[in-house]
Length: 179
Image 1 (cartoon, one colour):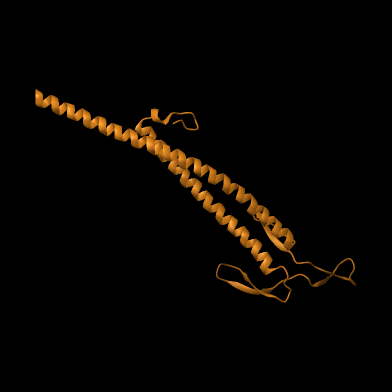
Image 2 (tube, helix red, strand yellow; image 1 turned 30 degrees about the vertical axis):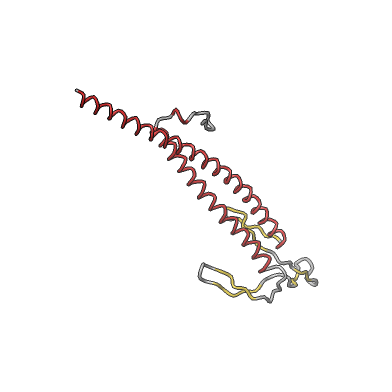
């Protein structure tokens, strides 16, 4: 019953096994909460992809939208873009401004991207999170197995102590009644 570190858990005391069990349980709890946070982030990125596809691509500047200012306050708006705008270099000509999205790239920075590039960015994020989630699943599986082994050895040691303790008390009772 060797563990990853090369320690034979059957040689550990009940107190050491209990401490190891508590530590493994705590690590599992931390990994589980990390897993849930990553799944939530993955879901948010998928929502971003869906929002770009459903809310921006293929819509004109006349499409009404509600833009959230807070979780319960929205303002009506229309999409900007695809409208002719005069260029400063050539005032007599106009160019068509393509639709764009502002992508949150982290730590409060936003980058203007085309809808296609925004979707590509968020797909990359979803893929990265999928890899991280797979790694966490492996780690959780390993920790669960370690915890199961520790609990089995702990249970065996406690049963052995109980059996040894009751055997010793029977011997003391037999000695007292003989004497």
